[in-house]
Image: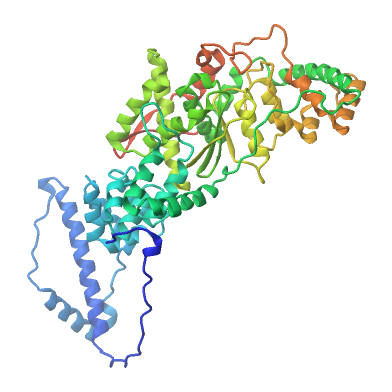
Length: 577
């Protein structure tokens, strides 16, 4: 029991003084008695298992139960006597390990109906609970966390404020909530750091408000201001995306006053036209075959799951046009072409639902569907959207179980209109070793696709699809990198794209630092008469969520798969593609 949570009030346990005791004389019979006790315990366990099996048989197949009236004391004496005659005759079978016994105990426990039930279980079986939690990522800990999550889907504010609950109970709660901290206050600080970028929504307060109120009620406003906020900041600073690069557009004018700037720009335009024509020839007639091939590729499973999450975030608000995610373990950064300010709210809705089990999750799914359907009454769309939602919730739950409670960071560009995947690329490129795995809600426009697959192919090293349309495209700052431009324009190609003079001018522009001329040509490139059915930041309209390219990609992400049942929760089987 504890009354206050703050670390400063945790007393250190004094060291015990150890005194040497005189050794006792050996008891020649004690080892034999110990072996006999172990054998008796093993026999009793075997008899219990046999009784259980008998109960499960039909009446005609059950055997009569023979009652042995020999007392345990008599059994021990007989065993000891038999060992006196022949010590090798008694063999004690190896019994279940403490961890196995603890898992058996948990399996026999009825589902927890309340936090009080969980507290009672922990109090009555502390050794078993400790065995289950060691190691924290073991099967026993996972089973206990899943059982506890039924009654502790989120931080238990009432328990925290009251100061009740022992350290072992809080360890179980922390494991259920996928928190790495074990002290209650640290757990609250860690949880707060995960939702700093989740503002209040129209119908729900910001999740950090309840956390702050609980800490103030338990520890007082003074310590909240001086201690807790500092702890939250320390946890937030550990995030992969805590200090992201500024997302800005690359310059497209001749700010440097280069004399041959317009010659470079015209040469770049001629080169881009030929380059895009060759890329389309390589891609083939359309994206349908590409999507069909991707659906059969087993190595794309994780890419598909990340894309599905980005698609769900897009469905909350189609005016975002495109959503991208960057993910590294428990950390995730979110980007959108537009309306990124409420991305954190959309993500938190999904994450909250993913932490629920059983009927509670089903209810959460039902509540989320109207947000995702945006008023659509189409039954096929309902089925596909629900399928993608279930898959996404499973993915989020698995991610938190494997890596810890997810920390979300919403990153908005300083210059409007930059495509979401280009924002993510800008942040990732500025990070040592790359910035994580990319998820994207739509097929890329041709400019984005060429930039990621040709200009910087190792940045994400993943399969991307393009609908092959081009637009007046806001260029990201990563195009300032001479190496990216060199690869993007494919200046080392064996077969030139345009005249040798154009290639020489483009190389000269890069060497002289006049890269803005090349970026300008890329920025303003839009082919006359091109199919612009895909609504991007350059071609926006009221039906952004219903363009044919988005529908095709959502069909790919909604691929038909059988729903399965698992421990009372409707889940989607993650089969290989």
